[in-house]
Image 1 (cartoon, rainbow, N blue to C red):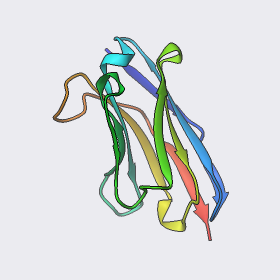
Image 2 (cartoon, rainbow, N blue to C red):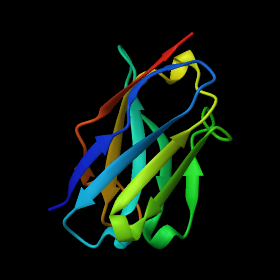
Image 3 (cartoon, helix red, strand yellow):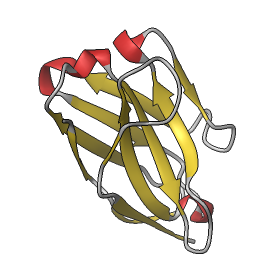
Length: 119
């Protein structure tokens, strides 16, 4: 069983930066695909960025590409989401997720952390 705990959310002005962290416990961290999703009020949860198992590849949604970067430090069992040039439309609850396999639905989810961008 993997447990995920996000942190680092908060209130920031448009154009600013935040770095979210997700600490994982249980399992072999480097063997999990890790991802960030977000859900804005009244909207469905959407994919933000993913880092594959063993860091073979990374990808991000078009809306954040060039602004957000996903990374991880295996020694700390932590995955990060560096968010730069934030926009009001980035306001959402951000969730960390982990997946045991190379594809398919994610198996484990964190509780979420709120990011609010003021314009």
